[in-house]
Length: 147
Image 1 (tube, rainbow, N blue to C red):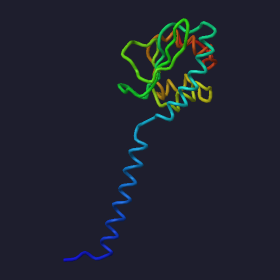
Image 2 (image 1 turned 60 degrees about the horizontal axis):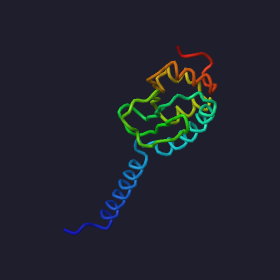
Image 3 (image 1 turned 180 degrees about the vertical axis):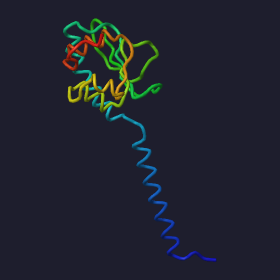
Image 4 (image 1 turned 180 degrees about the horizontal axis):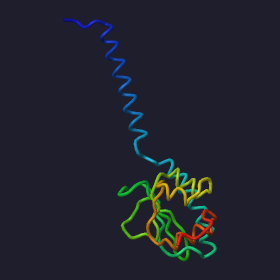
């Protein structure tokens, strides 16, 4: 039995729609690559001033998309330089900031209240809270110390 042209057309159309949905899904996925690039630039410029003022300690500040993911970056400070590492190593960080890159960027830029985002669960932090509080005060994103 031959298939009618209408059935062929319908089948072809549904395949095209499914294919475009799959591409859209794959491209959006959970990847935050572009968002992390913007956050990386913002974080690096903010921390560069603190590095010049000799406020940053030697070590890493890690920005991560979620628990257990390798998606993110670290800003590593030494006495001489500040560098960005896109591969997250296994060495412990001084501070780790976990969450959606847009939320972290909003807090870091001062568009959103960092403390409120933290208490609402929009971002999570771990590591040296006293140090993080100092950085937040210096950057002007916290009005009072964390601890």
